[in-house]
Length: 142
Picture 1 (cartoon, rainbow, N blue to C red):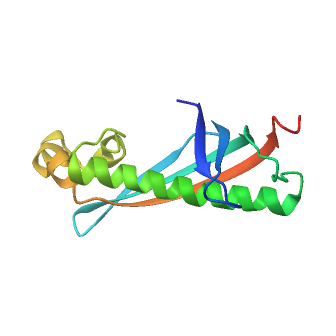
Picture 2: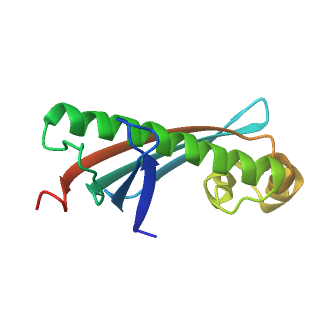
């Protein structure tokens, strides 16, 4: 998926939703390392966003407000992605994001990979998510 509409609470008033049209700004970069036998997974995602919604008190023309939206959206997205990754690994014991394809290179033979039992050990993973959001403009402004 290269694009989506993502709704976050407004950084100005959490009771008001803010809709962002987001597109990937390049490929998501993933890395798997091992710490004491447990997978340590880092994912870096960069997104461009356009503001789709506003209310009568919105002032998205100011640079400070756009920077606040970028920072808040990145933090919110980071939290949501971490929750998703921990939920799928701990509760569902499922590598639906396919991080195993980044881990397999550390095993010299297929039998080493099978012996490690990726799916059994994947539930012990810990994640670092880095998210960057760049508000390139707003459809409201265009």
